[in-house]
Length: 328
Image 1 (spheres, rainbow, N blue to C red):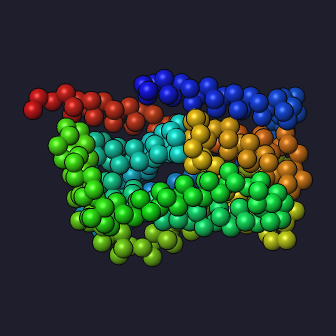
Image 2: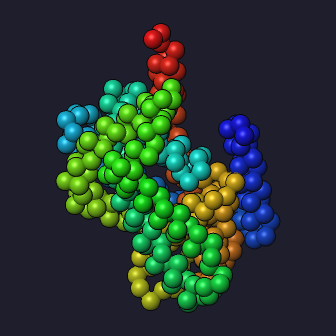
Image 3: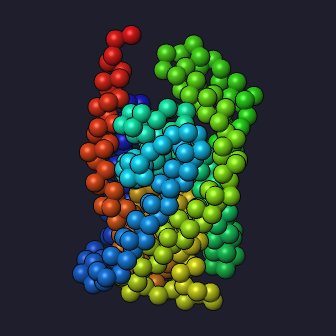
């Protein structure tokens, strides 16, 4: 199926799901909650999200420097912003890997090194999501809904587990990569195969920097959890838990992220993850309208924050197009 048609279908399904959620919780109640948003807390939420971006960009920087690539930190942030923006509009948020393309075309970073600086940390990122999200799944299933009702959450956990396994094999197993050696004879795929093969040659860099990457991921996900916490406070949401409330969001956001990885005809899980967020909050006694607005805010505030990346993304597309059109 044509990619444009598929994207259109995904967009229609996502919009329909969001519309259904708004209808079920009450459009009037949603509008009322939007009018009550505490702008101070919302600003704090955005600042925490910006801190997460800075930390994610820094982990790219330390890997590039270890591979001998010197770049201005601000240029890395710009590249990261493009990936984050595209992640909001692609299935399973795969658009984030466009960060590597921006590094390659806009700043001349070799393709294999650009890809490794993104690919390596994402393995740990997915692993963190899988562990924290799975703990949240078990807690919800056994405390609230029962195992038979949580199958869709388990699907998301298995998908993330499969992604981690494939990424590890792609980065560290030459035997696994050789299963796709037939790509050498294909025009475009051969270039991709060559880049991934070169990336494997530098995979030891990821192993060497593992402690740094894990530490950065811990702090970046803590920043995101605080971002969600302040977004909740902007709506007056209070979650009764036996542990500190910010810790609730440390587990909620990887759980919701899992819903974005459940195979579905949506744009980055739009509609599906918001519905899941509303459901989870309802288990803790949060009003449906507040929960639905929270789900929409945490998604679209990230899009709003990363919108300045549009010129950088368009520049990458132009340079990529010019590169393709060069005579051989």
